Image 1 (cartoon, rainbow, N blue to C red):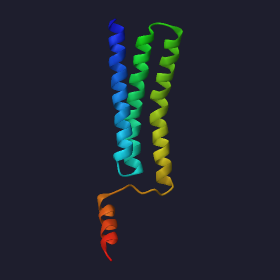
Image 2: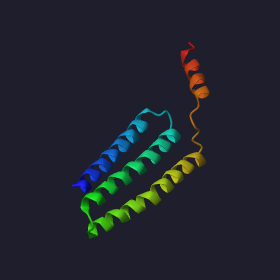
Image 3: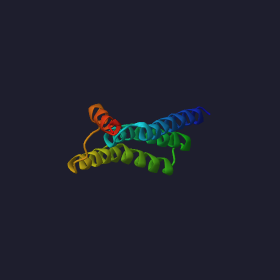
Image 4: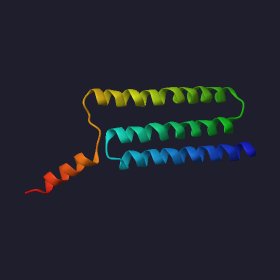
Amino acid sequence: MAGIVIAIILIAAGVFFLTVSVLGLLRLPDFYARTHAVGKSETLGTILVLGGLAVYNGWELSTAKILFILFFVLIASPTATHAVARAALRTGLQPWTRQKAAQKRKKAEQP
């Protein structure tokens, strides 16, 4: 019974962080901020959900597979996020700044 409660708490926390990840993706202004928010919270949310599934499953072969996937996500997700952000920087995608946004607004307001 305690294992089920722990699993529910882990899965609920994971869903919370995945939801925060989606909100960050929708609300943040540029690619780099979105990548940063999604890279952090998506990794943590996925790890919490997989950890909850492993606790719920108990000591079985499928738990070992879940833990292997958890370890892979822990290693691969930050690496992939870094690689994508670095590729964007190398292709010339400039980070968003408040000054650039203010200049664009001023140009748009001028007749």
